[in-house]
Length: 300
Length: 306
Image (cartoon, rainbow over all chains, first blue to last red; front, side):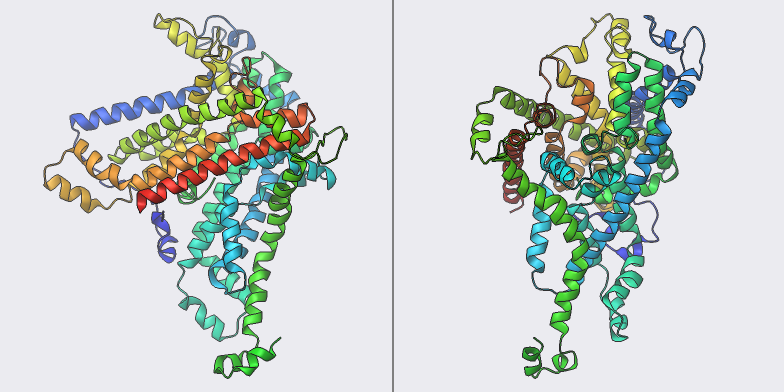
C-alpha cells in the first residue's frame, strides 16, 4: 500500500501537488458535460448544510423559528446571533482549549513517534522484532474500549479535570509510527555514513540528517494527528467536567441544552466552531490533502 | 559484558568493542519515550480493563472484589447489550456501502480532469474537517420535522413529511446520511490519490485500442484500484464499528433505543449506571468482536492476494 508521493523521500520535498490532474485540457464532449453536471450536483448537495446553517445564523430567532421555511428572512439578515453567542458563550475559551491541547498532542506524538520509528528503521537492537510486532498489533485496539479503565486510571492519577487528562492518552498513534518508519526506511543509508565516519552520535544523525529529510512526512503526520485531536469528542467529553477546560466539540454539546430552541444561536456557534479548521484548510489545502492521503491508509 | 565481544578476533569488534551493547542501548533509548506512554496509556488500561471486567467495581466504590466471569455471563444474557451490538453492526453494514461507493464516484468524476479541481475537492472534503458536534447541530436542524430544510423540500415536491430522528424506522438512516456527508471526503481523497497514481500509459494504450471512457473505467481504473478498495473497505468497517458521537448527539440513542450503538451502552453503563466492572466486560466483548472481524478481514485479503 505504498503511497505515491512518498516512494522517493528526497524528491518529494520539492514536488508540488501530488494530486495533479492528468490532462488539463480536454474537449467538451457529452460525457464530460454529464460528468461536470453530476459533480456539480454533488457539490451543491455537499454545500447545502453549510449554506443553510449560515442562512439560519444570520436570521433573527423569530425568523429562524418561523413555520415558513425560507432562505430569505422577512426581517432581513442580522448578526444578532453571533453577538449573543460571543457575549454569553465560551467559544473563544473553548477554541483556545482545543488549540493548545491539540498542539500539545501533536507535538508529543511527533517527537515520541519519530524517535521510536528511527530506532525501528535504523538501529539493530535486541528485541526489535518483538517491539515492532507489539506496536503493529496495537493498531487494532479501538479507543472506545479504553474509556472505562482510562477514566479510572485518570482518577487514580488525580488528573481528571486537568488538561493532561485530555492530552496524555491521545499521543499514542501506532499507525503513525509505522508510517514514519516506512518513510525512514527509504532514506538512503549513504547519507548517514559520512556522519558515522566522523563519529557523530545517533541523536545527531537523527536530528541533523533524518529529520530535515523527513519534513513532508512529519507535516503529514502532524496534520493527521492535529485534525483528529481537534475534533475528538468521546475522550475529552469523559475526561473533563470542568467548564473551563472544555474543548470546542465538547463545549458545543453543552450549548444545545443551554440554548434549547435558539436555532440562530445554535447555528452561529456551530459555524464559529467550524471556522478555524476551514480557514486553515483554505490556506493549506494542498498540504492537508496530501497529508491526509499519505497517512490515511495507514491511519485511523 | 564486553569481554565476550573482545575475545572474538573480528577486526571491527576490536575497534569498537561494545558496538552491540551500544546498539541495544541506543535502540531502546530511542524507543523509551514512546514506550513509556504506550505502556502507561495503552497497555496498562487494556490489561487493567480486563481485570476490572472481572470485578464488581463501581464508581460509587462498592464491591471491588473479583467475581470471576459473572459480568460476562450477565452481559451475554443482557438484551440491551445485544440490541446495541446489533445497532452497531447494522450501522456498519448500511454505512460502509455508500461511504465507499459515493467516494469512488466522486473521485472518478474528478479524475476525468474537471476544471477548478480545488473547488470540487473543497466541497467534498470540507465536512471531514468538522467536529462531530458541528455536524450534529447542522443535521439536527435540517432534520427538524416542522422547520427543517429537508422536510420543506419534500413537501415542496408533494411528498409527506418524514419524522427523521424521531421515527425508529428512519432514525438510523438519518444518521447514515449525516455520516456520509461528514466523512465520505476522506475515502474520496484516498481514491483520488490512488487513481492519479495509475500510469497514464495504461489509458493511452486503451484509447489507441478504441476503448471509451466507460470501458477504461471498468477495465483499467477499477481493477487497478482493487488494493485501495480493499483497504478503504477495511478501514471504513473499523471506523463504522466505533460509531458513537453522531448518535449520542443527534438522537441520544433513541427513539426507544433504536439507534443506540454499543459504545454508547458502554458509556452509559459506566458513567450513568456507575457500573465500571460491567461496563468493562461489555468493552471486552466489543473488543473481541473487533478482533474477530479484523482477523476475518486479514484472512480474506490474504487469500485474495495469494
